[in-house]
Image 1 (cartoon, rainbow, N blue to C red):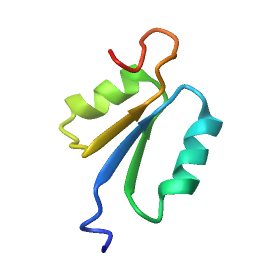
Image 2: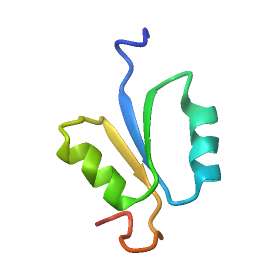
Image 3: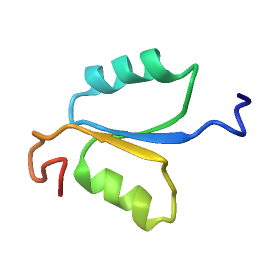
Length: 67
């Protein structure tokens, strides 16, 4: 699958090391965007970015992954 055809995945976590691990593991197969918390993820969505999948930490300060 070419870069243009790869599904875009949004990775949301308040721990930078966790996000970096996800990126290392998934960057060959998916186009990736990261957000360092729920508010940052919502800002990407509000800006019109579309994602095939959102992978979110459930325990983050201020807003959990489900919210």
